[in-house]
Length: 92
Image (tube, rainbow, N blue to C red):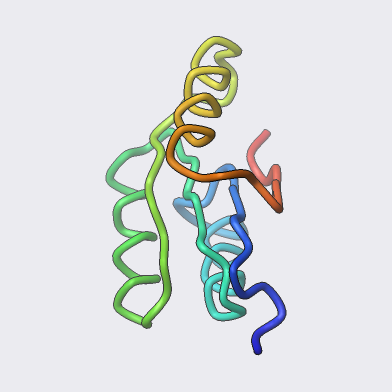
């Protein structure tokens, strides 16, 4: 069993750089990765890379500097999944 198998992990800023690397590593360890990213194209590219490597990921384009947008996206995540196990706040 992988270390993060069956865990739901939300990662902000997962469209590039350290956030993307973290998203790919979490997926390799079995997590379902929720890619929270301002740039929708970058989010979709991260999701595609994870899926092509056999992992599971979903893109959630969001501006984390917008409090209302963050509340909205986390309400959506709550509806889409039974809970959240990991929050990696990479974006600033």
